[in-house]
Amino acid sequence: MATSTTDAYDVAVLGAGPAGLAAAAAARRSGSRVVLVDAGSRVGGQYWRHRRGDGGAGHHQWATLRRLRAVAEGPDLLSGHSVWHAERTGAGFTLHTTTWADGREVAREVSCRRLVVATGAYDRQLPFPGWTTPGVYTAGGAQTLLKGHGVLVGTRVVVGGTGPFLLPVASGLAARGAEIVGVFEAGRRTGLARRPLAVLGSLGKLGEGAGYARTLLRHRVPYHARTAVIAAHGDDAVRAVTVARLDAGWNVVPGTERVLDCDAVAVGYGFTPQLEIPLQLGCATRLDADGSLVGVVDERQCSSVPGVHLAGEVCGVGGAALSLVEGELAGLSAAGVRPGRRLHRRRARLRAFAAALQQAYPVGAGWTGWVGPETQVCRCEEVTAGEVRAAVTDLGATDPRAVKLLARPGMGLCQGRVCGYATAGLVAGACGRAVTEQDLLGLATRPIAQPVTLGSVAGGPVSPVSPVSPVSPVSSVSTVSPDDPPEDR
Image (cartoon, rainbow, N blue to C red; front, side, top):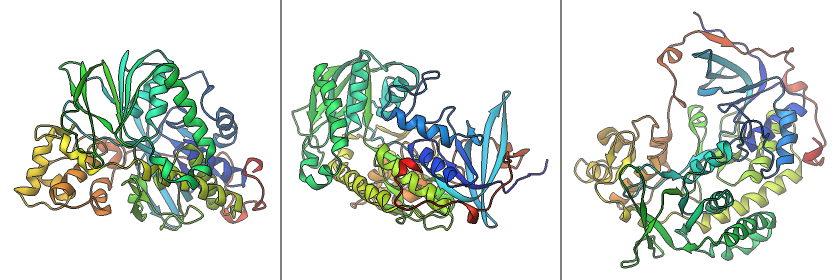
């Protein structure tokens, strides 16, 4: 059957988390014809993930979620739709999506004049011996099970990694009845103290952090700085972990190792922005302060590709408050409306705080010393650290892309989403240099962004997505005063 499309929308927004909801609401209020596309069955993204029927009540900024949903969802919400490819077509863009209906995959194409990409981020992981043992979770995975399904990953849980995200994960698990053996922060306890101006500009975030700390204190959860989970033990399930003190470079301090009993581990080392769609469209990137590859935007959230706007974690991990502001800026810009100065000032303040967090909780290069030659790096293809290093030392590879072709890390189901950062770090270490933007680009660029059947790739039956009313051109959208508060738009 021939592929059929329709130039249906002024603005398409990819992702229904804080940034995407804010973008869709801002563009729709400005008069644009908007479609909101998300792979999840319910809007809210990871931050506002909630169980079916509870509507998100009890989550942070629940009133904000409810207000945005009322505007952003509208009649043109495509939930459960995965966008696997995007391309420029004529004066706009075509999004190739798939969804499941009546037990079969249904392919659709969505066309738009402007595109806002707010696809968020996923957990960044560092391998260690035993990290593939059942019962070892990413920190985000543990929180997703708790928030989305009310499921505890275990009854005696170790939380480790680096960054402020460890606090809500540990406090959420403790509040639901899990015994938290400890929070093991690989970085400093006082990392933010060196950046007082950025901290003073976001006192609300400090208050949120203080709330998590009170919960941990109430449940008597120990917090250990400069300490990391360096091994997990168990056969069919995790039974214990080894933790150890780290020096300033994240090298293990000899003699500080100790074994702790547990039945679950939640580990996270920050987040990796989900850039498949921006990279497919040719958007410029840069290396952020936390070592992540992020999209480059201007003051209006415009990418280097005309008509493509980026918002939220794809521009750099900064939290929900920053994502809401960037999403509103992107939605207004995509609708042809000049954003107000208040939004720019708020973004600058929140972005400064996000940069301070990234600089306060860097990933030290010494983590590669925890990884023995038999430690798996790529879980999908079962590629070990020894094989990755051998591709450099024995076969002459000088970058992660070459290592991928020689040793196959990143060629499995996840396409390098889990092992990409670690592979880049191991390769750079073996070459005696730091990780570069090109290292990460070589593992992040994917022509297919989401799993899809060969039938869809081959151009099977496509259902065009049509608006429920005639489309008004972007040039005819209404405008608002740049000084109007965002809440009134």
